[in-house]
Amino acid sequence: MTPLARATTDNRLRSRRRSGERAHNGSVTELSGSSGIPASAEDDTVRATRALSRVARMLERALPPGISLADYRMLSAIAEGEARASRLAHRLAVGKPSVSGMVDSLVRRGLVARAVADGDQRAVDLAVTDAGETARAEAQDALSALVADIAGRTADPAGTLAALAAFGDGVEARQAEVAASRARGAVR
Image (cartoon, rainbow, N blue to C red; front, side, top):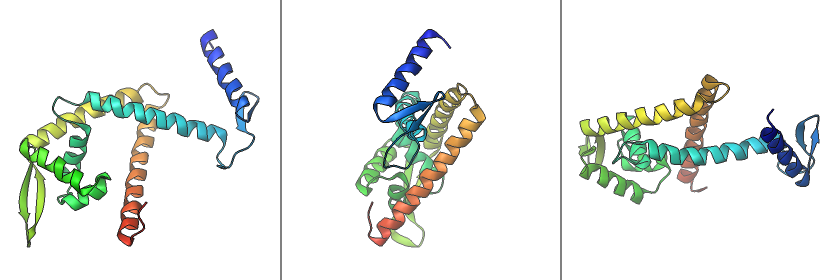
């Protein structure tokens, strides 16, 4: 271990000791706390949260010009079959007015088309245009390259990607629960 790494580790251990934790054989354990989560798991949660917030900005910067992360999410959801604005709002965890504004922008730019829904003249279905699919694919390639590059810098790149994919499944499950709660009138 380099002197800088050793000093950083020593500083972290001193900081943890001051916050009510103790070191034991080089590992840190929680002495008290109401969460019931070991200090190491809480530390990992904080580190993961910070990493996700930094990665969000990196992902925004990796996108091709003219496409935002919100555009990419919307184009991807529509391409995966979410053709109605109300379902998009639930899936993307945004309000219906936000979806309307985002869809209007994508339609103006020729990335999404509106069509009257089969069997319901009041409903409008959304579809990704050829230009929209090109933009979505370019964005996907740029974002995937960044994620692969970052995962490649970890001790277990394949495991990191698998964990991120599982995390995505957890996001989808949570969103489904939130949507069900809202449908029952118990908004979270």
